[in-house]
Image (tube, rainbow, N blue to C red):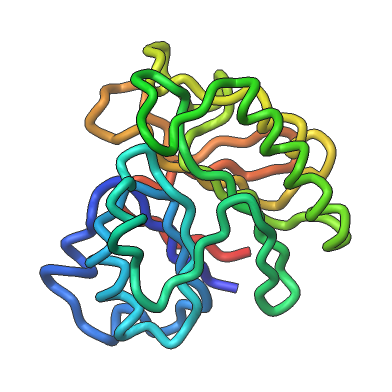
Length: 196
């Protein structure tokens, strides 16, 4: 399965310089948050595959203008062609904005999501906006990752853990790909295609 991951910055390759042929061979599109709903709606107009998303910490406008033709997987498990995908959007709480959570709040969300993962018989892909703590995160509070994600990563060892939130222009510490045990970890900033 070929998956197009998107996050944080609308890809000019897919928006300003769009051609339908650029989506050929893509089986699924997933947004890890902080993208304009208009961009995702635009993608949904041309994509013949599901577009899944979680909320980023800057996605308050989604309440008024959700992306048309897209599926929110926040706090849920979505199954596509047998692949089980769970979503947890938002970032660490730093100014009490929408889609910001404390570590304890995220632990509660993880606990509820684990019930759905168990009901689905396991997990293949974990999609979040923020990274996990000390796994591609930063040291400032807004970009600190969640320790709670390790409960899912350790118990289910998904094939893929994709997140956004940490931008490539934040400095030399940016990591696109890393690994945690048997899980491939991808920072989806702007765009990244992966096959699983």
